[in-house]
Amino acid sequence: MTINCKGKLLNFDSPIVMGILNVTPDSFYDGGNLETESQLIEQAFNMIQSGATILDIGGYSSKPGAKEVSVEEELNRVVPAIQLISSKFPEVILSIDTFRSEVARAAVNAGAALINDISAGDLDSNMFMTVKELQVPYCLMHMQGTPQTMQTKPKYNKVVTEVFYSLAKKVEELKKMGINDLLIDPGFGFGKTIEHNYELLQNLPHLKLLNLPILVGLSRKSMIYKVLNCTPGEALNGTTALQSFALLGGANILRVHDVKEAQETIYLYNKLTENQKHHSTSA
Image (cartoon, rainbow, N blue to C red; front, side):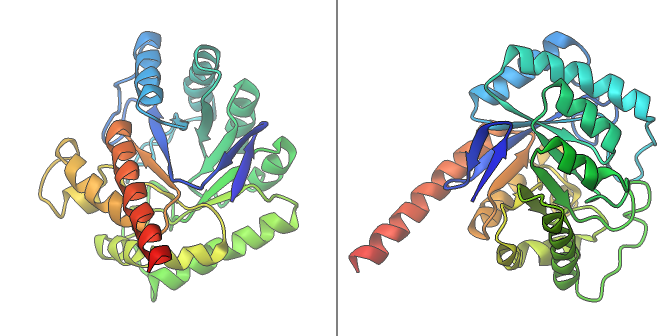
């Protein structure tokens, strides 16, 4: 499996890390941490040095109950950040975390090479056509409701089946439009209870049937810190534990706040699977 990011081919022979760069004042874990250019450059540099292949830049907090942000405000946050990082670190692949086609277009024009959409096109009817026109990879995530409503009362008859078929339907629609550079994300924490999240994680291998790279975002989320009765700031160890499980389930991209730890997890996962392959061929 490969995707073409503006001429840079990404292959998934080994899982990769996507570092989270939120240029928002209110994100659930790192909101307000990157208010100056020097802070943004330093964080991007540290993530790249620690092994991040992609940096995902977002200007609209999608935490449960997040405040609405105008298109203008989102553009004012993300476009200068993308221009700055792409000029300082031209080798890194930049992703724009947005559900708005207008923001996606401006971000790609500024230097982003991938669109990461939490709504899979549901919140902007122009998104799919914009992706087609821009010819960049598109990550579609499953979400029930909107960031403002998604955690009110999430309800499914069979969460794994419903998430799978929702993504499969969108993938089919996109491929009919000629859009083939796709990634999928089950959307942990987006319109799901803690029980839904763990059921999805346990059944992550089912998503491999779509034969697309799987992006997993578990980093410091409530499905970890609420179970461990701690804060997001204390949830790194739990994050690493669940990311290990996600890799064993077929995750190709880990979207994280903590790149070094995620990269180490991948390194150990690769060592484990190398040994498994060696023993199976020598048996």
